[in-house]
Image (cartoon, rainbow, N blue to C red):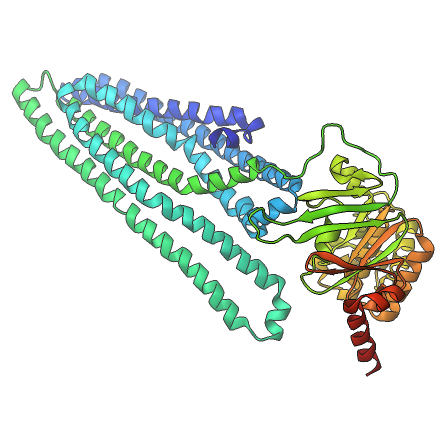
Length: 578
């Protein structure tokens, strides 16, 4: 896990190295200070030698100044390295997410990905900064101070050998108790993020149904769960400080008693007052170092779950990948389903598509009808290889889609998904998602085909009108037509409209279909629709039910042969007449 995360340090490796180096320098200088103080007491103050006091006092000031410089340098390098590391980690995770297919997104969930890219990375950044400073400072302080303690008095050093195992045992017990709680907390953060996203995204629905109280209660419940878990963890970790304080003051009392006895017995010769003063300072340094080390372990415990979650993103392999020698050219818009079966999860009890076979010739207009849950969207998502089939094969241009270079295939298949998405920026910015090099004339032509040009010109800034995130400042029908125009700019061999004209009136729908027939006759067009009128002029109509094609043919043929199609048609015709 650490090896995976360490790859994100990259250009900040030097800063990450210099920070602990400076920290070692700071610790070394701090450890020298008690020895200098001991010399001042024994060689200067007690004999009344002011020369020693001035010389050692000046050395003390210089040592403290060097310690300060090293400390500032360590802090600066650590901050630079930690912020750079978090930037790289966030970039690497986001880049990895861009390679994910729908299966990866379904597995991890959108809310969880957002949490990992934000709060989880922030936690790891703090942990990394602490690692390259405190995780170096504390052990070095304990080691160097202990060496000096043993040099001063091996007998007094035994005090630490008693307290250290007790502290280590207590700390390990606390960590084992707390880690499962923090793991649970960060999973709950995913749920909290999901609730916030869902609420903000659906704010208009929430307000129209006056459900603010219910949404607040839902948020309060999940937020309360996080609060309770954190309180429980903090209560457990609160025992850490009393243990440390007990060790610190217990050691000071023991050293005071034993040290004073040694001074009296030796007549201030073998063990001096200055030595005892140094021992007090070293005791504070060692045990405060241990206290800080315990905080490092606590931070590591808290950050372990975020580290695992971020590594999961970095290690997640896309389920769809290019073959060894991919085909890079799509010859035409022929589409063939050959005994295709598919399910979203391997553990699912039932296939979403079951033994589907159909041939669609290049340039044909194909209508797809079916009830909710009949797998219409699943059917078309297999064409640009958004998912891979479980059995059988989907062929485009006579080639199995699994043999294509994914980018080359998707460049020739334009999809207007059921959930239309516009991004923040101008209308031109959104249209150029279809073709980054599109000219103003090409954009206008595509918008005329999609019946979008007139309403665009109705805006004060025309094609330079700013679109808010998600297209919240345009209507549903306008959003659909902009998405259709964006797809047309790709000049694809296959155009898929997944219920993409449901928000426009029947007249506009008919105009769009007429423009398609006249302007892009060579493009294969697959239109999922709820209205029979939207597909009755199609060359081929597919009727799906329960993940199977139960009928196919022209409008006239299906009226005679398909009971499902006939019922849908008659219900819509009667509804229209009424």
